[in-house]
Length: 368
Image 1: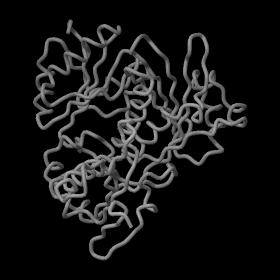
Image 2: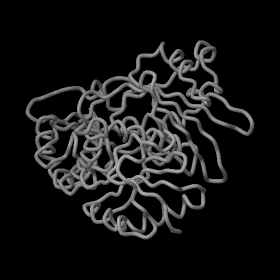
Image 3: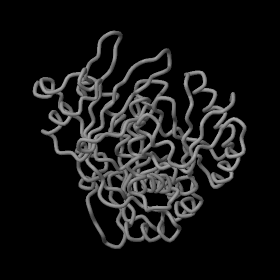
């Protein structure tokens, strides 16, 4: 047995990693939230320690459903204990992640669920409550004057990025076969019109809890936009995500959907470890959109800012960092923004992002 193929187990406990979902193509299976992998330099204890810390960061994101948990100082403290929390690990060789001809050494590891959960809760980190929903994803793309359904078998790069994102987030993601039965039940026009009856009928053949529909279009060089609908039964939440490439716009939509679901499954009152959600309205042009985002990033400073959703004339952003509350105070006092009464976003033309829980709602009242 080559050194990279051996399994290392603590406490005599053994589960073959081939059976716990690491790298598994069966994406609709319940994901193993406590496992992950990372490229390492070699099999030395020092390199392994670095890899285990990276994998534990991945696990923290999966357990909470949000990347913003990594901004929580307590998570950094727990990550430093990765070596004492690991339950098993092994090495294997894989294709180089940068697309080169060589191979990379990959460390796979799984952490002790009980010990890790206990530590996270003791530090006030809210974990996702309940099972992860099974999501069926339909995509359509506008190409000039034509619109077409995206066939997963014809777009391996996009499909690979979707599965990689789903695995990193602990999502149960399915893609349709897009065979003759699918094509006869659903058209690109149905998806573009967000025709609920046709979407539900075409989705009925696949086991699912939610249906995510994306409509992708190119706005210009390096500028893509995707309109999204997250269907639960006969009701849908709608939002828009923009990106520098078609893959970025699609992955952004998947991540935005996950953030919504994570917020719904988070205990009331939790702020995801130093993250504050804010809604900004009155953004009525693309140039104003860009200036407003840049102004918000400058206001957030080192703490950082994440765009969570865009829909019509409104966006939702997350102020990230331990001083997120301080940034919120600076927004309250800014001449650029005017705070709206709580709940006023719910009457904004039925906008889907009005359902995202936010700490404040503002309208652009000056020139950024």
